[in-house]
Length: 477
Picture 1 (cartoon, rainbow, N blue to C red):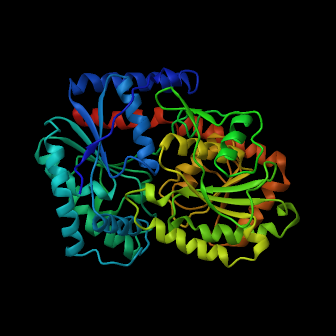
Picture 2: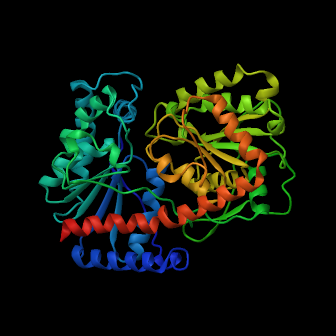
Picture 3: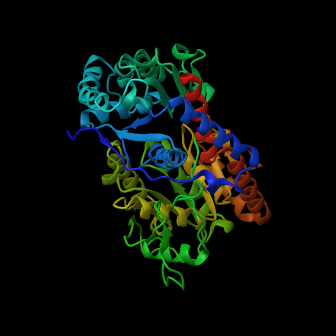
């Protein structure tokens, strides 16, 4: 097993946000980070998670820590190492905290031993770097077992849980019984929703901070239509010709990037034409994302007049590029089998796209172009911690349709910033919502504009970073 590693980080100035957010929000951020510099007095703020690539947590850290560093904070990011057995247990915990059984394996002493043995060398390596008085933010179940040793070392520890369920089901109870002892004594625990706080941790040390997106990243930066077309054509997600644009984007360091690689797409026939309206869902290959349900809902919609020309693109990462999710490949293979059961005319309009992960900037640019080109973006999760792919689409002024579950309903008011499905398993309800948006162009445009405004005011990284550092400042003070 390779040792714990540190991620190289850029520095970005908060000045990027001047004029993007309200003046008082900008000044609050500058003042909060200035106070952090004073209280830290040369000490570091560490963030620790289980992967540097793939998934919303890694994307948020890469962005947030760059802005912290740009304001003079010694922000660092460490990634723990694990073996397949460890990630099988943590994926089981991921499902449990969502109220799902996952693979059904026991969360017993054997599972606890796997976690202890995997985390021990990671803790040892981290303690060699962390100084007493440093602040350490541990992210998600994979890192929870590190909290006691870091607290004993004199670090100020915050545990950040990005997932959860509104109802304490028996599965969720098993997951929290496994995890809570490790983080019960942490000075602060951060959740994405108040409802996600379990009874065992429901005290004044459990607080809520919503996740965020980076408006300037390769995934969310502005792209003109010519660039969108060139990127999607190069990636093989729409048919050529590419038009007059170039498949280019701006990297994190400000340099120019070019999309070179093609997605691996399961389809019957060719890619959709540029002018074919796309229904898009972007997410990991996870059973809780309910890709099969999206296909069934699209099949019902495609039989209606307004859906006659539409295509569906289900896009996720190349499973070989996501180290902490051993389930992804199995889920994708099951989804392919389900796709093959549809009649050929439907298979010709439903595309399962695995996006290349060799270059995370390139991957982000492809996602950006795909979301911008979508007529509608769907996030029909059965359960969802927050759902940053929805936030991304909202920022791009896309009309969105989402399940009324978890953090998705914190982002969308039904009929205002998007449409919500009361029953995420109801394929006909998805078809009805798609029909409504396709038939009513004025509604689609209004939903998109309101969605963009909601993200601008509540879900950009400057607000997220400010809240993190207000909490850290409170502990340090």
